[in-house]
Image (cartoon, rainbow, N blue to C red; front, side):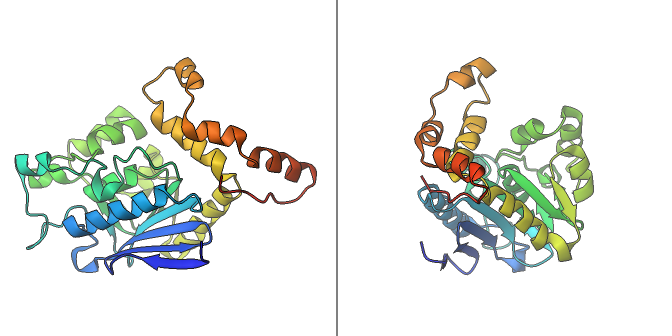
Length: 268
């Protein structure tokens, strides 16, 4: 992989540098809301990441300092679907191709730089870690426009935070601050906007310190065995777990520890 690559439309940017991929919603004219074309591009990017073992961590964010993503583009020429038509045509992988995606074993950090509403909030729920600017605002606001958070919001929010706190958002459609969401347990860290990139970089650095094969195994086990008992999950022979067990990283990590040096991780 080259040191830095960039692909994608101007509205959905995909940059890769080293082992870090960055996906950026860049539609500021609609507060980074997504339409059908941008959703399709998101899916293409996530598919590409799934098939690229050289990507060890992904940061997903919105352009600017006002919005992470405000959900589906309901402006003229936007999504334009309501009711049963929208439900029938739902994206299988969820909002932005991420909120319900079950095959992405790479750690994902949501860098929340502003409004994360509706599908934007569901995209956050598709991430593993959430780092937010202190002015960021979260909410599943669909009930306030006669809709329902169909792309995982109703289910995934209750998995992340206590029932009564989840229902306080779901049944009111209200917006919550980054600090309130941190108190609920959804957000890992809240910092001033000027410090957001530095905070995200600290988390990226900690992830890159780990063997990518180990991280893929951990995420795969966590995401694909939630419906199993602990004993059943322990017995599951998932592909990423088996790959981690035979990876040269298992030996390299121990040798690096014994030799008091940084490990040289393999992608496989």
